[in-house]
Image 1 (cartoon, rainbow, N blue to C red):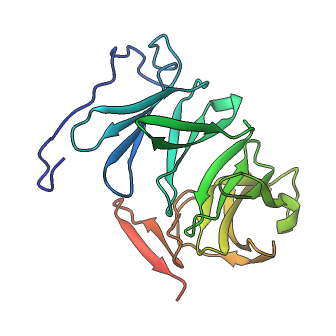
Image 2 (cartoon, rainbow, N blue to C red):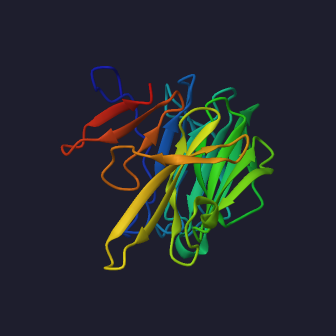
Length: 246
């Protein structure tokens, strides 16, 4: 789209799917504005092939590169690395887990890497690009990984936050409030089966769990940390509200 909303090009998902539910494509524009990265959940869409990750020329819509993924995903999430042209993609496969890929473009081809786990859900990338955050697919813990190798530098389970791991879960939300402070979300139920959630600050250098954090959100997912000490929630009409620690 142009600035006034005029369509420049369109890339159709062919063949057209006759599956109404269970598959949701996603895309992201590269930081330099030159490439559109598109995740296609083709397997669940019934296109008789594996999922695809496609890089399109943002100016023309032409294919730059594409790769077949070994996933049968319902949807995906892209995260851009702030200091390079690399992109992370988390493909959610429902009860089968979550697969995380890393890619960049080189000489008209996609340089693709798959991290060696299927039980970690990608949450956020640190604003300095040195780490990324995941949550266990079964919601037992959170982890901080060095980038790009994915080595675990910190793991915190539910009991590290002072809660019973048989009753409380780490939610698939949160992210980096600053390069050194991550927001981790826990959820549970009261004795009368009322659901509750609580955000915590975590110092990712020391692993220290700090005080509970009031994000002013309406649900565990109503928080979008921006990495600079501020975060977004939504008002009742769906419009974003920006909050700050300072």
